[in-house]
Image (tube, rainbow, N blue to C red):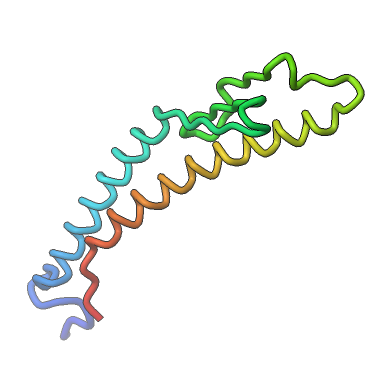
Length: 113
């Protein structure tokens, strides 16, 4: 009885084999870059430096500094807003670098159509 489907000899054609190697190489590069990113820290400020937030590459707050003159008991909402702005800017910086590195890795993938 004749075999159906597949490739003669059971192996992958050259292009498919190369594509698999590229995908594996890209996966290793992504894992390495992700580990590097997780070890980095990103810092942003708001309120003219009154609030400084640092986040890790895992997007966790690792440090928050508030200048004493930024603390106004009559205007807690402004301090809260400054904290939110600083934290969000630090997270955005971490995400932007991650996106840029991943685009660089995936641009090397040569997918035939």
